[in-house]
Image (cartoon, rainbow, N blue to C red):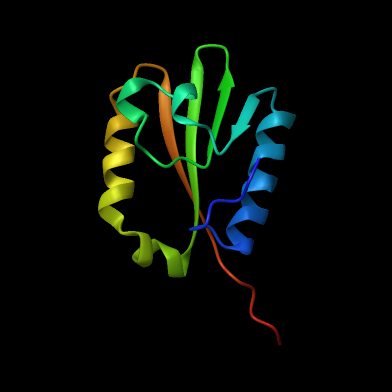
Length: 102
């Protein structure tokens, strides 16, 4: 498991928490899945996590507010639309932000 170059520390930390949450719900989780773990229509998509539980699969990306605009919303839209076409799959976008210090 390696942290992709385009994901910052905050996003990676939230991704690990998300993976733990899915595992606690009984899902089998793969972080930063390689293209051979994905259906052909998603092979060129950058997903942070897939979580499988029986016939249900959740594909997720974790982004900070800043990286939402840097990575481009068209890519996320394309991924979500592609995932929606696959029976039993759903897409989850998790947005995380830095906490303001008082």
